[in-house]
Image (cartoon, rainbow, N blue to C red; front, side, top):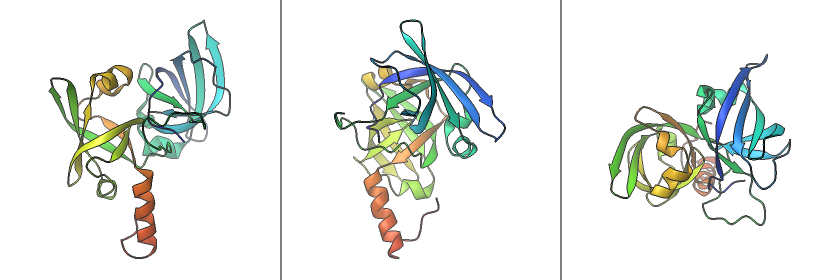
Length: 210
């Protein structure tokens, strides 16, 4: 479980294909107070992955490795990762973690496309388009996770929605890198998903394809 508050921005160093169609993802990150260990969960652009190797690089960086399966590559932006890409990182929450964002599982629902980047004094507004099944789980003033960042939905119209990015969000995450045509990982609010699934199970709403 995560909170959607990015703790560091790392950089992809290598993506090496393996024999089963997945990849070994290597990245560097600014050093945390304690180095992640193999078996730890880290959200990378909102996708929960397990550390398989961890080494210190000098005094101020860690190099982390992850195995990414083919299904994850197909369903998330990780399939398009390459060396040099900046990625949002968050370690799994603990009982002592402050819940400053909202409950995030690290399970990407869908990809969304950036259709407009609207700059104004004090913030940047992203306009995004999603598939219908996910759009119905996005509500004004509700929570949404975009590339691992917990955000508040500013507006919804059909299959499109908007979020406002304040200067600190642009400074502390990689969302400042996004431009029109880019795809981002989307995770809807777990509470809305749970209600939607329960209503579908009882025949009140049509089932949602996974």
